[in-house]
Amino acid sequence: MVNFVQISSAFIILFAIIDIIGSIPLILNFKARGTEIHPLKTTLVAYGIMLLFLFSGEMILRLFHVDIRAFAVAGAFVLFIMSLEMILDVEIFKNNGPKSSSSIVPIAFPLVAGPGSFTALLSLRAEYDKVNIVIALTVNLLFVFFVLFSTKKIEKILGKGGIYILRKFFGIILLAIAVKLFTENISHLVSA
Image (cartoon, rainbow, N blue to C red; front, side, top):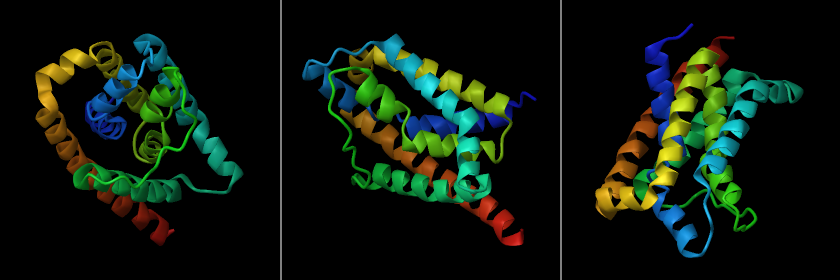
């Protein structure tokens, strides 16, 4: 059932994790090194990867005998660490994947569709209807397309200070979401 509260909440969570605004300096760096970025292709590949994980991720968890609530608690730790990265300007997660000139790697995966977004999608499934998550994901990926399409204009408008402030703001939001995910799901695991 479509629920606008769930959609807006899922949108904010995914928006904070995907952090396409905070990734603008990184995207500009790729462009400066000659990487050709195809906004539509990059967005569609990231969207496909995330939808696949949203619908088949639980099946994968079952293979390892992991409950979705337990995964949500583990995901809360990952989100907590990611929020600390955003707030404290530290790098805890290192991207040691292959260096490629393609806009698929590293932009579609793992920058947009990466470990944080996978964790968030499965964690959201513990609390929200799938239809609301898909709508929130679709709106987020439309925003990703818009940002990829107009990266230089956005940087000019926001400036480095504006991007920095947005990153801090969404870091604090993400921290609060991580705490909420942890407390709501740990209580179900303890009482079971």
